[in-house]
Length: 325
Image (cartoon, rainbow, N blue to C red; front, side):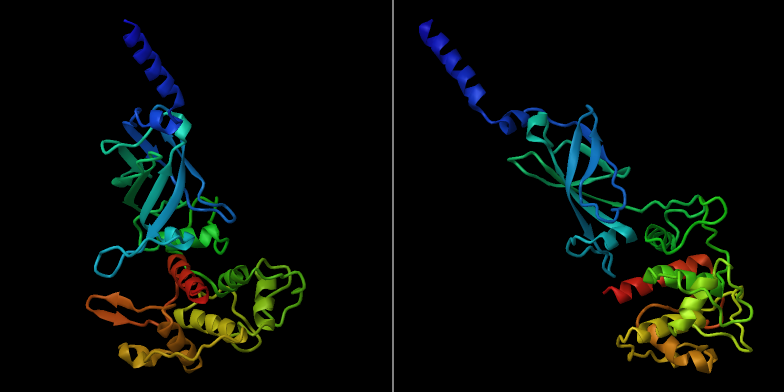
């Protein structure tokens, strides 16, 4: 009897001396969900989800994988911009050792509503490593998550490059984009101080118009010129070749290397590029900022095609990645 009591006391004492992590391992998590939003400026990988019990846990690390051309995934990278594009997300879910919970091989986890796949479990901390494929939602009711332009719209919105239309909850992706709108995007891209741009070099741009300061800023910096006869034509829809010129001027005025050129004759309509836009268009195509438009089996350049808001968002995002590569 004495031996039995002594053994029982020893077991109790041993349990008291065990670290909390050892006790936590005895409490498996049956299921959990994680909702991860796009990272905000200055905010680190400190995201939270809710366990089904419900306790909080911290998403300790987030990795992003880029899809390769063959459909496989490359090495995980830490890069907020990749997340903006959507693709695959891999997370390490760090549990509080004192929470009394641990992940197991049978834990069912969802990441942003998508079933996650277990990559492994840290035996010491009980943290789980999971990955899932999902599309990034957009803040606009008329932009579906699987639209070809959805990631570009989200990128431009979250970087204050383009805003919504009407009541602010729509984006109007198919609407045309004017020359005035485009220079305001360029000013936002530069975080330009427009306070001193109070005059106007164009007869059809009256000071006080919502776009007047941006137009004057673009002109003074050599990014944009007029359309002739002292006019800027602010309400004229911007064309693909005009956007190329604006970006090209922006790039060379910064003193950056813009020497690369694509062979425009590779496109059936390459000869239709205006003479004043040929250099800029060849550079923009070579840089991957403006791509071809596929119709059937043919890829066209369509230099004089007016751009929709969706197309502008895609081209602006491409330019941002090119500048910041």
